[in-house]
Length: 244
Image 1 (cartoon, rainbow, N blue to C red):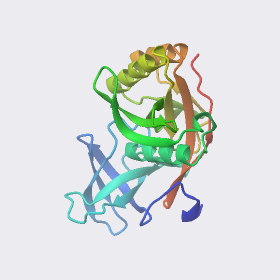
Image 2: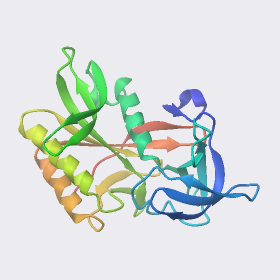
Image 3: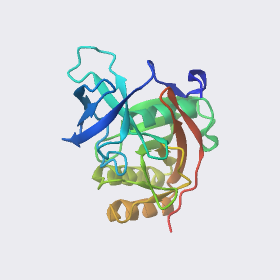
């Protein structure tokens, strides 16, 4: 994949290191190719199931501000298979917004504008993407979730840790649908070995139940997988959402 082909290009390209340990949710210690050990920022609040094993190769991005306390951020993990997994949760929103704006998500085309982080709902939420019609009226509320965990030969699961926030977002989307609006949950699977997506019942049964309820209430559940390289990330294609 050339940089030109990436929906989001890393500039500069990512730098490899070896993971020593992850701790305090947002911090990790790594060792680079020169043997230097340092602390990096981890932009992921989940457990990073299967993506945070000590000794695995990880990929780092330098912060735009060189004076930031932790200059480097851990944005991808490399599996033994060679597949890179994008662990930066913020990147999922950018990928989804770029793909929808470019008209690459067939279910979400025909809207005049895409707005990000718009306040809505009864529980103090901000919807990740608000799609508006030509008159500037809300036409579709879209929440985006970054997915990194894959089990059982290609089944991506969400969440990888108990997510009360995720369950709240499903409730908010159900209220939009109940009021006659359009609502969608967009699962961005940042790894190219995923074949399908399913709720992680064993990890968060409450979220899994809410996901089933949301689907029955008219909330659209969409899942797309992405290819991650040291140069950028490309949203590849949709994968089925399996609820039973």
